[in-house]
Structure formats: C-alpha cells, structure tokens
Length: 252
Image 1 (tube, rainbow, N blue to C red):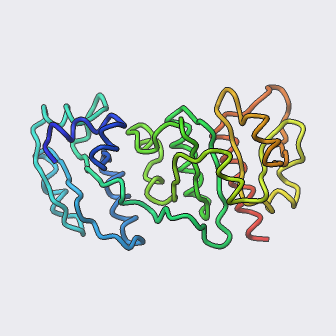
Image 2 (cartoon, rainbow, N blue to C red):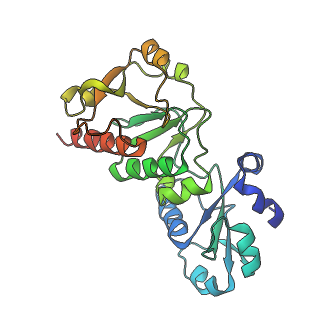
C-alpha cells in the first residue's frame, strides 16, 4: 500500500476498501506477534512502520516483518495519538482469530446491540479475552472493532477474541435457542441457570436491547445484584461481571 493510502486507514470506509487496519505501539505489536503463535495464518502482508530510533527494536523481533522507516513527521501523520510511540503495524483485516461460524464446545457468545463507545468495546474485548472461551457478536450500527481507539483500549485482546460483525437480532434466532439478558427484575446471575444459555444479549449504552426483540426471541432476564443506590452499571462493567460469573460456572 502507498503511504497516503495507509494514512486513510483511520476511516472505516478505507479500512473496508483496502482490507487493513492499524495497530499502534510496542505492546500491541508484541501482542499481535504473540497471538500469531496460536493462529494458522503466518505473518504475511503485515508492514511495520517505525521511526529511526526503533530500528534495533524491530531487528530484535523473533518474527521478521516487512519494515519501513519513517521520519517523525510522517509517523505523526500516521498516528492518531498526541504522542506517537514510533511503532505502527499495518495489518490485514483477515488476520484475526478464526471467526468462522460454529463456536467450539463451551464457548459462550456475547451479543452487543448497537454499542457505540470505543472504550466500552475495547474493555469488553479485554474482559472476554481474560476469562476466555467467549465469542463476540456485533450488530450493525455498532462501533467498528478495528477503530484505533477500540484496538488501543482492548490492549491486544482483539487478537484473541473471535468477532462477527453485522448480525441482526433476527439472525440470531436461527442460530440459538436460549437467550439471556440483564434486567433489574430478573433472576440473580449467581443462580445456576444463568450458565445454561447459548447467547447473552447486551444493549446500546443508552437504550438497551429493544423490548420487541427480547420478546420475539423469548429471552430470559437476569440481574446483577447490587446496593440499588444507582440505577445502572456501565455496559463494559456489566459484561465483565457476567463473563466472570460464567467463567466460574465452568470450574464447577
């Protein structure tokens, strides 16, 4: 890709057009290389952009990458942060955890309906990767998981969690038979039955999951018990607590 085209990858339409996204910073690039050890795909078609001061670091990597040295000015044009770290990888969208439909045994599916906040999505990915055995399903009109802010907030978890995009709630009914969602009036997530579902539905930060959709798929309500001092939890916090609860059920 031409450098001018790489600069466009901060926009979703160009990520989709060219089939690449950007991964910035030493930690994320190292996490990418770590994830490659568990993937069948080799590290091909990845370009590493670095400033001159990081040439020795690039040479020390166990896996050699196609490397391009940029000036500080060029790196500033490529980075979307105020203080560029001097390391950015241009990675194919196709390079990811196996995203094919058909989850492995015991893998839980978490569905997010029109999630909008990049920080929330990145944090959710981080939690799902930490607890393991989760697949993330995203509706259309959700924030792009390959948005630079999401990738950064995930702290590399995006390389470890299978992601499917553009799924309508109606599509899920042909794939799953048992759905759960959160509601203040539901059963406690600590009840044994909470672990028996195939797909866990979480809604938009402000609007939640549409009630008509919940009724159509006959989803069952559960709640995270708290002090009731406030009326809701942050979306990422709610998903993380549920992921923890489900991970504990596998140990019983």
